[in-house]
Image 1 (cartoon, helix red, strand yellow):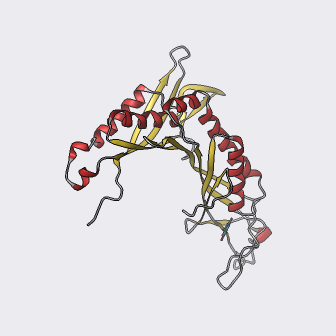
Image 2: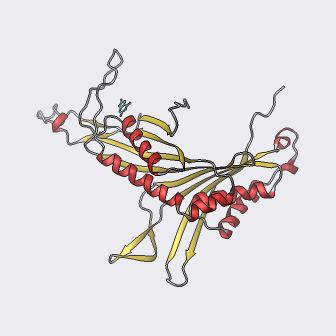
Image 3: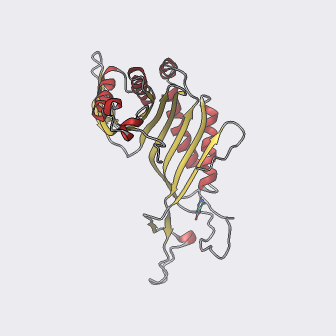
Length: 305
Ligand SMILES: O=c1[nH]c(=O)c2[nH]c(=O)[nH]c2[nH]1
């Protein structure tokens, strides 16, 4: 006899835009986010018995996303996600877990004649700031913060040699290659017991400071590390994030290795375009390498995911 093994439901791709107006200075600040909110709890009968009495309509969930954005600050996103998730537990006794994903899109203040403009912004890249919040009656507020789609490239300072060579190997070793990736970096906060604990961390700027720190560690390490491999460079980034953000238990990365292949042009008038003469490369759309890791504070437990 089949049984419902797991279930969650809600609204995805809810687009929200909020303007904060400082009446004194006339400076406005904008936030654009995409929100997903999925609920779990005693909702089984809605699947198995057509019992809609346990269903908070996904349309109501969408409305709640907007109302909570009006009632509360939306920055930092960790705090907004917590307010939103906690609302569902406080309001509906049969809901036991709220899973909230918030993606914040970039709107960076424009400078005009060297001065920050009070109400004009630019989308400077597809990079996003993300939060995955799991708010539950038993586990408190579990927050995972991340940076996604931060696209970077270095034209030297990256090698890859010493790897397994056997009858499947074509790739030549290299001591100088192009390295490019879309950074997806996540750091998981030690669970917060109450919403008040999240409010305190937000007031102390812990979430914004961690995001700033992670972002600069990523940019500095990517740029300055004489990379032996994607694996080793990402591990160095994780170590530093764990060092500077003590409230974080694990730090991890998912990095595509976006290949830029050398191109042999010797067929045309003997042109030299490989090795130390390489100038024109061929960016690859796919396939790409995909390298992941998660580093935890305590003695290494290698989670196979
Ligand atoms: O940094 C790298 N790690 C790999 O595991 C790998 N494999 C590969 O073909 N190129 C690379 N580069």
